[in-house]
Length: 165
Length: 350
Image (cartoon, rainbow over all chains, first blue to last red; front, top):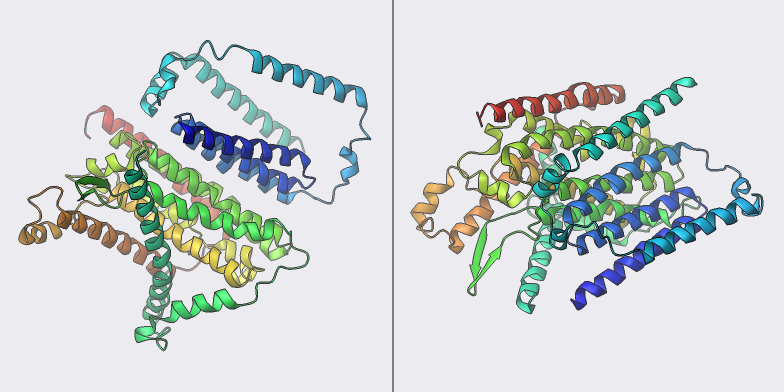
């Protein structure tokens, strides 16, 4: 159990540290690399929570596919863009403050909320892929299909936006 | 986890990683001598018997050469890129079973570093991370050839990863498990290629593209891009990219063997040998285990030779041909395989 805690803290610090570096870095490619680091640490946390399927999917989808496309696009962008455009004093102050307040409120609400009352009692142990699939295609079939529809709409939207030029 | 288990695990990691890493120089030697054999040349034959010490000399040279970083290169990402390339290539092998079990000191040791129940996904996930090394190397070098190589390679790897992933769904449906260990056990009677020939073809071709090997080595097409993404790299950093390429080859060959050629199941000719040696009768005797490991190594070696053979036989694709081939032939082929497998399973042919 002590190992569990030690690994948790190492991964948690890594995850949060990388996430902070994403925000602090001015170079978007370096930010992206830190984001990948954060995803990997998060996958480690999932593994620590006995969810190997979720961990591998996290690496496969987020670190392996989505972030690769991000970096790919960023490499094509002109990085000598004036950074002043996003500099902290050029933006109006009030919306920023409101957004920050809302974000902190949300965080506090999440932290203070009772620990996942809808969670499955079985989720204490490890879920096998077959169990996840059974749940996904029986009890949660409707939300699952809805998500796929959402992705389809997003894809069509992307094509429409790209075609406009 | 007891101390003994931990020691066994550590020993396995150290042993497998040392074997993997020391296979790379041997493989480089085989490649150079093999290419010479194919092209009717001699190849390196002066250092040691048959030129066997040539890789050793190369390693010494790599280690002691000057290790420059271009002035305009990115300070942080430029040295990071070779590591990003090497680490995923090295850790992927952890999920692959290279033997059944072995009995030592009254303990059954599983010949696999980690028996993960999502083994295939693990291999694919870490395989897909290797692309960062190439992308970052290309971008951080601040060189137009490097970035062109990196862009080509990422587009290529993303495209072929789709075909690779789709080609794995057929075998997954047939075996009904993600665990590579169970998959090998299920192939005791007949090898997976008999059930999934189309998946094997798709998988193996996309594997070439994933490893950046000829005929898909456009990221480093010498004729157009000097050396592609690793143009600016020298000495040990270049050696790390080189090692990553060969480690990818080993892992992909091992995965091919595990999925389609029975993993560590004995090569047909070896069963009489095992009986003759009298080790086949005890299911878990050390002799049989070693024969299984030998079968696995021989099979992997065969596929590594195919990798080398193809590299020195086929010319390079043109880039548009490569993309068209990936999206218009390989990917539909993989989808077709899923479709056919589904029908076969529904009709209970498999």
